Image (cartoon, rainbow, N blue to C red; front, side, top):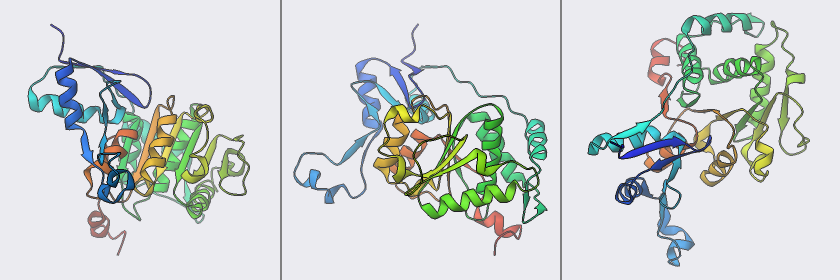
Length: 294
């Protein structure tokens, strides 16, 4: 007997849900939301647009790949049967610890002790391939990005790190230089910066850029990347974020990091849709309890 919903992966952006029309209509309704502030948008006022965003496309029967856990939730609530092929990459804690030890990470000339929550976030990112890491200020997000990036580079994958401001491009680049002082990893040769004034040709292994600098690049330009990191993902302009992420049809590894998520469900779902489901790394209270922040 065929399942009510058959989910297959179309590419690294979308999943396709094969189902009868009445199931598709239900799915469409379930994943339809009013956009915050819709009543002030001229298109709504002029009655061109109804103010809603639809995360499930009825015509193509496609939904963001990161929405699959919510499709499963939808099916379970209604006791619908579902067919889905899910696999995770094997990545043990032992392997993670050995790899991070091999990086010999330093800061200000002194060895860094990788915290338990940073190790756990690194393992989760590697196992799930797609994740939205919720990790507050002072939790060491740049070290998590650095460790994950270095692993992917060891396996011949090209990385792009997208941030909201030019100052964050410089800060992240500086952090990488700091971490690499003892292991002699050549940041200037392996990492490239892109924003106003920098060449647009990508010739290194890692590109750190602002989303404003790449949003107008053609889809073919994005094909050169295997891994994307979106730092401070919650600050990205929603339309620009989806424009970029929808062009990355061959990019299998997607890691978003953010210190906060607003209470607007639709924004959270879009972020999870293009990156992956939220994984809470550590809370500010936990950092305070351990004396790492005031």
